[in-house]
Image: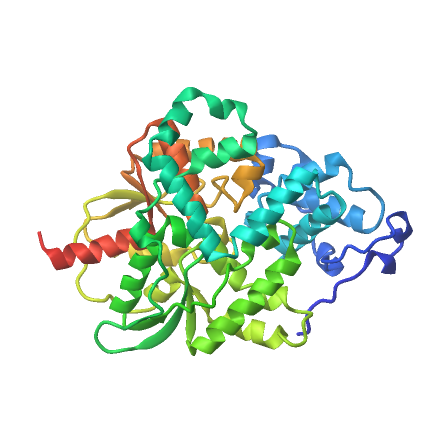
Length: 448
C-alpha cells in the first residue's frame, strides 16, 4: 500500500486563516478517530488531570482544528499538546487503529516552527540536539564532567545546600536524575566485532545508543555477552549515529531523518541480518524509519527494509533456545513495561518469559505496568511537575508489590525509576533486563 501523502492546510477549507502548511501532518490519520473514549483511562495525563484537552481524542480535536484553520496555536493549545508524553498507550486501546504517535509528533514539529520559545531555549535545544546527542566525543566529554562532579563530592554539597531549589526546574530535574557515572576506563568505543561463543548462528548489528552507551555502558556490555552466548557474532558499526528518536519527539523531524539515513547506511555496510537494540525508545524509532522516510524516494525502500530487521534484544533472545545453564537468582522482582516497548513495539510477553525462565526468581505483576513512569524521552526535563506526579504513582505501585527489584528495558525508565526509589528511600534495585539475565548466566558459570 502506498504511504499516505501529507496534506497541506492550503488544500483545505479554512486554510486562509493560518496561511501556512502543517508540514508533517498526514491529515487522513486525523479522520480515523471516532472519539469513542476508549483511550481516556489509558492516558496518563487524562488520568491525572481529568481534562478533555489533555486526552488523546481531545488533542486530536485540537490538531484537526489547527490544521483546518479554525483555531490558532495559542499558549493554551500549545500547553495541552506539549503535555502529551507520546507514550502511545492510546494506540493500544484504540479500536479504530489511530496512529496517534505520528499525529502528536507532527503537532510538536508545528509548535517548534510557530512557537520556538526564547533565545535561551532555542540555544539550549540546539546545543543538546545538534552538538551533544549526535556526537559520541561530546557525550564522552559531558560524561567526564559529570563524573568529576560526582567524584569530587561537589554533587553531595550541591544537593545538601538546597541550591537546586533556586535553579530553573529543568536543570534541577536533570540533576535529580543523575545516576552514578561509570569509570572512565569504560568510556572508549565498544569492540566493532565480537565473535560468537561456540559456532556462529547469526551475524547481527548492535545499536549502542547515545545516553545508553555513556551512562549504562555495563548494560551494553551485558547485551554483547548475552548475544554472543546465543551464537551471534555482533557488529557495532563505528559509523552509527544517534537514532534520532529524541529529535522526532522534540519536533525536529529533519534532523531525525538525517540521522536515520546515516544509520541505515552504517548497518547496511555491516552486512548483518538483524539489528539488535536494548533501549525501547530507540528500537521503536528504528522500526519507524520506513514511515519517517516515506516521502524520500531515494531512501524509502531502504528504510522500510531496514526497519523490518530491527529487534529488541528480548525479542531476539526469546526466539532462541537457552544458551546453556542459568544459575538461580532468589529474587522477588516486578516488571515495568517501557511505553515504546509495550505500546510502540508490542513486545510484552518476551521479557516476562525470559524472567520466568530464571530459576529461583519470582515475578510479580505490577499494577498499571503499562502506564508511563513519566520519563518519556526528555519529558521529565521539559515537564517535571507532571513527570513527578506520574513517577509517584508508579513508585506507589512498586512499593505495593514487595519486590526486591524492578526490571525494565529502557534507559529513560531506569533513570526515572531509580530517582523515584531513591526519593522514597526504598531498597528496591532498578535493573535492565539484560543486566539480570547476564547475572543469572554468570551465576551458573561461577557455581554456588
